[in-house]
Image 1 (tube, rainbow, N blue to C red):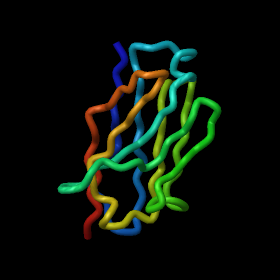
Image 2 (image 1 turned 90 degrees about the vertical axis):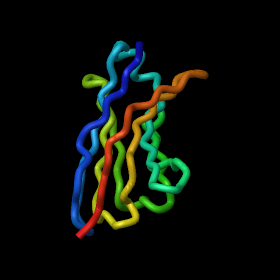
Image 3 (image 1 turned 180 degrees about the horizontal axis):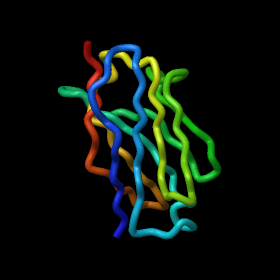
Length: 118
């Protein structure tokens, strides 16, 4: 059974940085390498939105609101995906979710809270 577990959320001041990690279990490294991995976020009263996504060949796509501030990367050996978040803004406050897609299957993590506040 595939499980995705996020970590690294917390409280940070505007302009600060955070690193989120998502670790996959229940799959091999080879299988993990076939996944498209992504980060999504959902703020109170808003729909869940794409933050960043990295495909199996390493191509990254970012949401417009985070371009130039966030960086997604993956480690096949560690079966993990990382989201580096810089120049954080109050409006980045949300629950951040890790998602893995392969073929017609999708898996979600439980989410980690990121709060940007002074």
